[in-house]
Length: 262
Image (tube, helix red, strand yellow):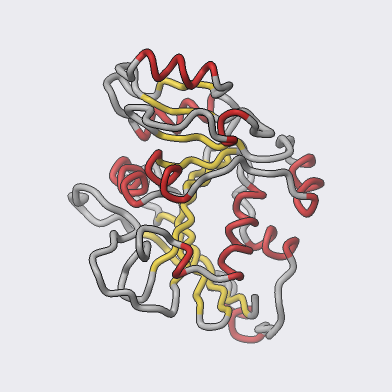
């Protein structure tokens, strides 16, 4: 990681640009969650120059080592990682692991050794024999609606997952999902998508921060954007908080602009 431009600090932005790799501890400071006990939901996504969130159905092709370094840092700071069922299936999700680099920081913040993975799924069409459900360091949560198939709920529970009802119908209500997680003490939230889930969070107005990697690549094709779903009546406004650069990749961080809907 070569440069940090903290746009809220004009002195640093203009005169403190260092051409070196940032340590994990420095990245953790740069991406620290706001203080206090209020819930904070941030998203971490990657996009090509022409707006694709994936190539051949996966994000790895437009990512980089530095991108994965930030990916690991954001996980190391979170209480829970919220992810859609399709992304779990496509990306081959595994349980989050404890990392020594973040152990002292997590202990000081009263966090467990690793973030919980919270999978959002209406139909619970998931393989509950996978390690994500049978062998996590922290029990995996499955967020679903009250009308979820009872036999799939039972299968999730038999595998060791905690089923959390966060919606009155078959699907999950984003606002209720955030409340349910916060009620379990999980207030530092990170979502890694996919695009449909991010679109739902954005439409519900619960997204506080977007960490977007802009990859110096073009893919063309018909890949999804980072957020997908019905258009918002009015665009949500965000304010640039910082930018990191490495090998042409831009690692941007935007926070929701204050306003009547914030």
